[in-house]
Image (tube, rainbow, N blue to C red; front, side):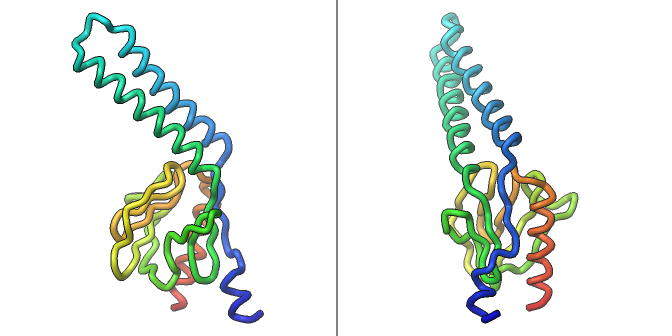
Length: 162
């Protein structure tokens, strides 16, 4: 294989789990509807409380829509980068300093956290799939646990070889 073929070869793939995706959106949607119901049924409450419940309900429903949209994509690891299936690059492999996946690591459910070198990337978030804050990228959420573990092991091995 040529180096160019190796760079575009998919080494690991991380897809959202359909049952987790549906349950997550259903729970958030139900919670948002609950808040909206409380706001519209508590006419004896203060206007501030009603507006707070309305705002919280709308925010949670917006989050449910974002979760559904973001988990339609997956993540792909190639020889040079970790990107989502739309092509957005989360991190280049040569910029990854370490992979944290221990019990006490600050990471998404069933996932891992990447610590990158260099300048911190812009904050970004795809609910249920990944987040970036500074030089840390959290991967996981509604994804398969075994796929996340495999991707973390492949990344750890790639980092160890450089």
